[in-house]
Amino acid sequence: MNSGMISIVGRANVGKSSLLNRILGEKVSIVSPVAQTTRNMIRAVHTEERGQLVFLDTPGIHKAEGQLGKLMNKMARRSADGADRILLVLDASARPWDEDHGWMRRLSRQQIPTTIALNKSDLANPHAEAYRKLWSDIAEAGAETAEHGESAGDSTCPPPEWIATSAQSGSGVDLLTSRLFEGVPEGPHLFPEDLLTDFPRKLAIADVIREKLFAYLKDELPHSVAVHVDKLIEGDEQWTIDADIYVNRSSQKGIVLGAKGRQLREVNRKATQELEEMFERKITLNLWVTVQKDWTKNFWILKKLGYAP
Image (cartoon, rainbow, N blue to C red; front, side, top):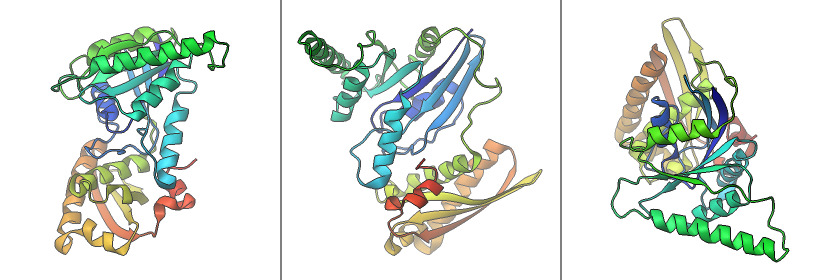
């Protein structure tokens, strides 16, 4: 059998988490149309008769503003180190962004083999050829730099394998999974075969709540919101969860609560429903909205939330 570590990288909002969930057949990473949804490094395990793939789902690279954004970008860039293979996810329905160029330039200088998933290939006006040309131009420029005796970093990696995928429909996902198994070393399982993720339970619960908040907040203030699970009491048949929803300013508290608190109650209802399905237990979820002024700039709060090392 083959087993290895796959680092999933790419800019924000290209569908990395959706693609991972599709490969696993289970939801381990939250999904939202809001960019920069993933904030932690999520390790997910796919085990079958061919072996085991251990995926590192990373925050999407974006133009960082503030301490939180910088930490997320740093986490994403470091994830490629030590992986057996890199899975670069691109949004084939849109033209290349600066962040896509940055990832290609970085990966073209590394020796780690790379697979490129042209995700959202089922949407209209795909730009697959633009991405292929961009990679070719970057690789050619790197070769010219090396010929002139200038430092180009480590030896360039082998040419990437390109696979068109759609996390939404599942198109190309089986082929992608097969190619990833072929691209990792022979060896035994790295984790127990019944493990789906080693993501800490409290952080996973906080992510479910945050996903439900994002569904209502849209682009209004999602990047100013965080969730911290303060208490988790695990009974045999019922769990009690106390969680704080952090906002930066007092004016944002009312936006999260909604008119007469109806929005927060609806978030609670939907999060409770998903958590009960996840853990197969009755859940009592208590949510409070707390003002933590400029929490996105406070290292100790970021550490408590699992965003800082």
